[in-house]
Amino acid sequence: MLALIFASKYLRIMEARRDVFQAIADPTRRAIIGMIAKEPVNVNTIAEQFDVSRQAVSLHLKILAECGLLTMKQQGRERICEAKLEKLNEVNEWIAQYKQFWEARLDKLEMYLAKIQKK
Amino acid sequence: MLALIFASKYLRIMEARRDVFQAIADPTRRAIIGMIAKEPVNVNTIAEQFDVSRQAVSLHLKILAECGLLTMKQQGRERICEAKLEKLNEVNEWIAQYKQFWEARLDKLEMYLAKIQKK
DNA sequence: AAATTGCGCAAGTAAATGCTTGCCCTTATA
DNA sequence: TATAAGGGCAAGCATTTACTTGCGCAATTT
Image (cartoon, rainbow over all chains, first blue to last red; front, side):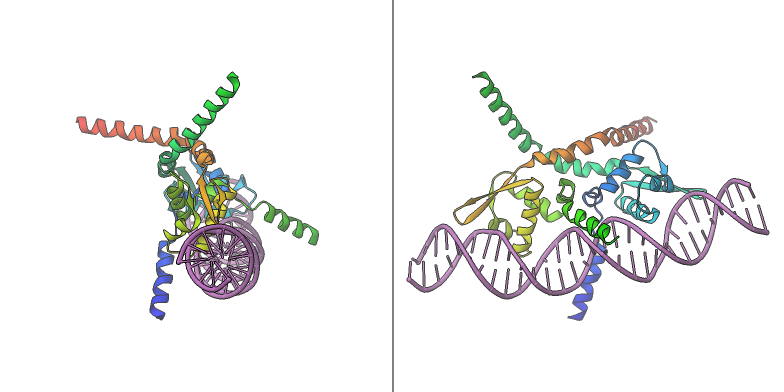
């Protein structure tokens, strides 16, 4: 019984969700992605742009790195963060499968509006 | 000082993030979206598909409704959930602005692979 | 060599999240 | 009309999240 509890706890820790959906849910992390998308930037430069502590930003970077949205490379005493946005494709594909639904709805709306306008 | 703390607390509560990014971050909620995308379904039918309690599912539905991804309508004693996926477009557009970056990378990789293969 | 810069690693905290159980009210069915 | 089915509301709990402050260490500058 106790073992089970420990096991489940352990499993939960191991499974700690670090997926892209989770990563981009946070507005600060989306802003970070926006910052590094065009060119690699070092940690402190990123941190300066936000009004939270460097540590907080550092944690966000860690999360982004863990789910594959960026890589870090050491360069002297600096750590350069480089965006690896391929992983965004996972979200892109999830969304894509539903596009037909909302686009169909919009089409219907458009047709309806056009019809109204004719009268 | 105290007023400030209360004010900030109050603001935080009022601002409670209920955006689409947040909403789709949860795997259960994504699964719910998958269930109701094609046709409206009532609450209990949705809840039966998951191994969490009806209350838990109900909360997920509430969150999805609050951020506009579904609407509920009462029908006798049942509440029918209907997907309104237009809001997904917000995510879609956010992603779209970065497509060039990861696609450019993939193109480069493709070209590189093609080059290697030729040799 | 001394001071500064860049940045990770804890430890601690408040709030948010995800879930449960229990209760209650309404609508439908036997 | 009694019972069942659909489903909201609220309290309570464990975990996670987002953040802070303090410390320390290695690479640079002065």
